[in-house]
Amino acid sequence: MTRQAAAVPSETQTADAALRARAALVVPGGMWGHLNAARLPDGYPQFFASAEGCRIRDVDGREYIDFMCSWGPVLLGHRHPEVEAAAQAQAARGDCLNGPGEVMVDLAEDFVAMVPHADWAMFQKNGGDATTACVTIARAGTGRRKVLVARGSYHGALPWCSPSVAGVTSEDRAHLLHFHYNDVASLHAAVAAAGNDLAAILVTAFRHDMGRDLEWPTAEFAKAARAACDEAGAALIIDEVRAGLRLDIKGSWEALGVRPDLAAWSKAIANGHALAAVTGNDKFRDAAAKVFVTGSFWCGAVAMAAARATLRIARDTDVPGHIHAMGLRLREGLATLADRHGIAIRQSGPPQMPLMLFDDDPEVRKGRAFCSAALRHGAFFHPQHNMFLSSAHRAADIDEALDAAEHGFRAVLSASAART
Image (cartoon, rainbow, N blue to C red; front, side, top):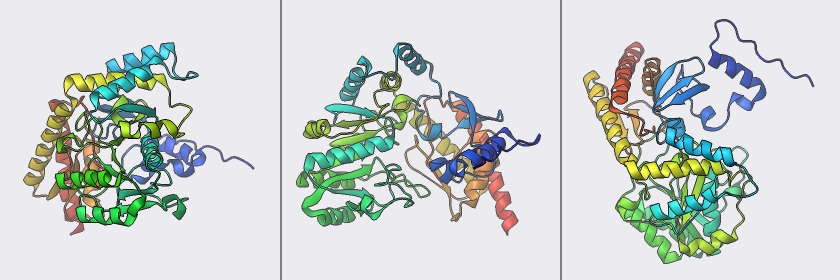
């Protein structure tokens, strides 16, 4: 079988376009997963060359103020010097060894000291590793099968929880039952349907389904979930993969007075280095010791060293407080601009992880027009997915991004006028 020749870039083709053409020949679809499904607006790059702080540069040399933070992992800014120094110091000693380094015990102690519900911690690489480990531990600890999840919530890209049904069998999800986020009656109905086979209720820290307004959990809903698990002897699992460390370093539901039995962490805990964690209480310690969950790279010491530095900085400098303030500045600025142009928008979610949607925009045409224009003026927003702020964002960066957003709102008006 003859392999196709790689596409030869033309003199006028961008570096990003050339890489896409080459990738199309050797990568299925040219890209996979969320980067393929995200359907970013025209003009958005797929390939990047470098980043620092809250700025990211594509392979064509264009620089943007980054409001995706690598889809969440970058909490302190790209290439944070203290985090990178810790990672490099560990790399000089070793990373992938025959077993973990001392840093694993240090990091587990850090988590237990920082997170009130945690009596222990164990480590993985991706968020899907952590959510799957939580479900496995809950089933091992209870001897039951049924797991309740909110309809539309994202918990990873494994067959039991993937948003896609391609390659997924009904058996993969045979023991999942659904409820509606923040709907206590729906939750109680799902608990009743599980009967004596309820192993766990798995819920995201807040509702962050793509393309719809974000919702913070109500205290009534959070307490109902906790009470249902207590009554049934099941595990309450909070998926902190997306929100962990950005809302509250102690856990996203601390403000609600509700603590989980198990929590899945990833994304931000090592500021861009690949790491995930499960934290749990003593009720599920034996189950966690009994299950077989593992990975060849799960003991990688470099990411753990980066995580220790990240957690320390988050504790010592009130990272959630800073990014909350910057998120409010962005939210207020966007609201002012939208009002000035007479454009109706909806902003939802925590300011640290904002989402802006346009009214009367079912096909996201306004959102795409806004983002494409803002991108040309140096701000990397997203039209449907919640965005992320980092502690590297400062007031001047937010104000510069708002200048780019001004062009975005003008583009929405021009696009609307062209269609009428």
